[in-house]
Length: 305
Image 1 (cartoon, rainbow, N blue to C red):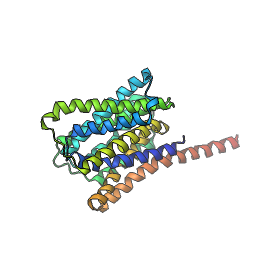
Image 2: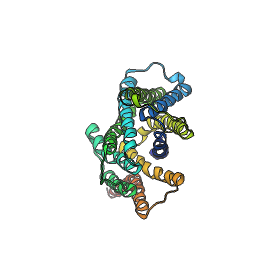
Image 3: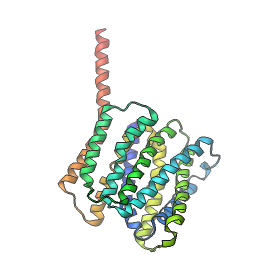
Image 4: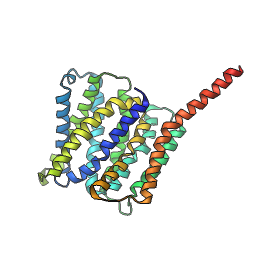
């Protein structure tokens, strides 16, 4: 698969994830955070069992080990982000979560010891500045929600980086399905543990249409479909590029907010969105321009020789 197609799939994943800020915020108003996640990932696990029953047999050692690690990162990241969203605003949550775009290059360098191009660093810097301007978070009063979300961002950066490491050399569908299922199953176990540890004494569940829609969307679209696509196709791009594309999430969340809550964009938000998109486009075209320049230069040298 060409990288451009993989990048387009990552954009689709960003769209699916971007809407979760709205659905999750609405959903956890009617039930506990951990119970929301329990039902969400029961739905996601059932989707895997229904659509890929034949691929859940004979887990090899790599599937078990890598699935366990990715599942822990995925699950802890989700728990921290979901609980954080209860205590902070959507703009602040979107901005802090989007900081993974800044963390991934450093995590990638630490774990892989691979050179990060200057244009990737520039693209990340531009996108991060744009992210701040777009979300316009108010940090005059930091709270526990901001801290939980910030910690979750570290887990997301590790998750994005290790996703590349663990799937790079595996093409078989069963491996993809098993990794995806283990991510959901481990997140489900962590959510159940958290429910009994934190929320059991204060259980509440308001059976509303909004809650049901939020659970169905988050379970099927934002978990089953998005995680399967990421596990299957992120390897065809690189973690830094994937993180840049995932920084589109707050833009998508805000567009959804405009539609749902009839809010509007300020000039600062529009400028921030332009900067973020510019950073992503720059990361896409800069390598092509440089490669073309090097190719032309080499061709000229060959002609002289």
